[in-house]
Length: 202
Image: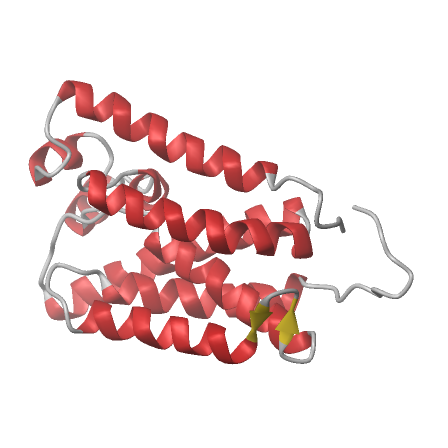
């Protein structure tokens, strides 16, 4: 698996990709503008259903509405992703990240269809909620503590994050819930507990 001196290269690469995409789009227009973001791959259910633009389920994970949106997500990605990647392994971690992001967008799209309320959406938060859910499962599997991370702390952090999402406007809460559920499921299916007393290698 790895040790505390390892580097979470996949987490770094994903964060770098998000920053590069944001900088590229910032030079061409306003990333806070819904039409501009829609033209560059943001999620919008009518375009997916009517035009078959399914790629938006993936490309929207790398788009952010403004610097604050990007900054908040990248801080969480580096904090949570670093720990999960070192514990879970790179391949399983990347699978968890993208499955969670896609699951969050699918649930969000399904809810949009049910409510007939369509909005342009983007962001890595569904994927980040997913790796948070996976890390929660990993911590629970390790008797409620993994290095400096406690199960209670993880529960509190998730609860607060969900609360702020549901109490704020313009937040895609369905993507958060879908990503979280998918991440927990990925943790259950993919995580293999390490035998720490003997050590192990990735």
